[in-house]
Length: 68
Image (cartoon, rainbow, N blue to C red; front, side, top):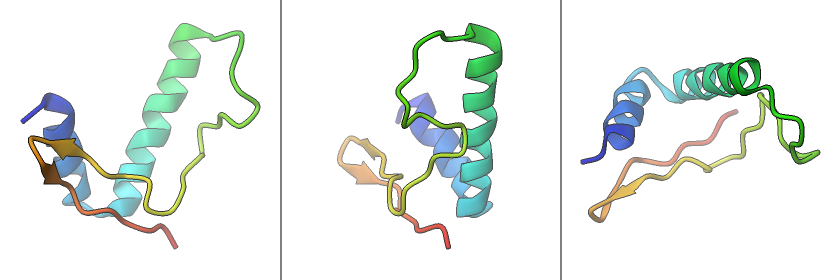
């Protein structure tokens, strides 16, 4: 399995809110490090959709979740 798959699976063991916090941390790191000039108006550090986390690796799926 890929590194990304294993990383997300490990974070998901702590719960879906932890995954959102992890995503937010990496997005902020991207902004601080890369300092992009052009981002979609819909791009946000805090963006999350219900059921938007699904990983496929060799046909496997990490359980999707909803943030309430």
